Length: 242
Image (cartoon, rainbow, N blue to C red; front, side):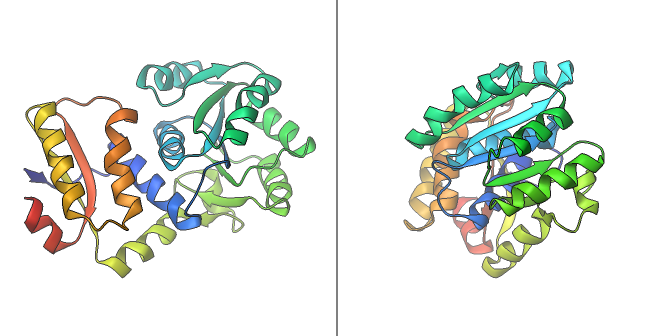
């Protein structure tokens, strides 16, 4: 069955973040995504980075946020120093294997250390309140080739012109394809799997964005009750799958 999507749900936030990432580069293997803060949208970016194939580091000192992301499986594990994080991520970047790490530390202090050590992510985003150090560090990261992207219109990053809006990046892409967000809800996991199988047969073989989403989402996303799957679809595709 199809329902109108609630933009606040984690799965929708993950799909939007994942789709935005794939507009910035087609292959995130061997890439590093850095973000500050782990509220729901920060958690969604960590999951989306994993689905896209990147290694991500999310920095937060809020124990509630850290417990929630571990419980939801949004990160693979939590470390307590930048050196631990670098050691954990280094091999996975080299092997082009996805990994999501949370660093329990002051986001501002850790960001300044990252910038001073010349650690260069391919993407930087922030979900914490405004601080002068964010822009200073962001400019250093951008000089080393990082994309600065705002994934939360309510975050401090949204007021900084150096950060590109994920909404504008994604909405243009969706308009070009006449894709709309649709939510399909099911009674059982078996029904969800059958839907994913039909959707994979329906979507074009070259459509790597949506095919990877269908193939990986069930393994990485937290379990939902009732099971559901969100997906970008054209009107014609929705008619075929409804």
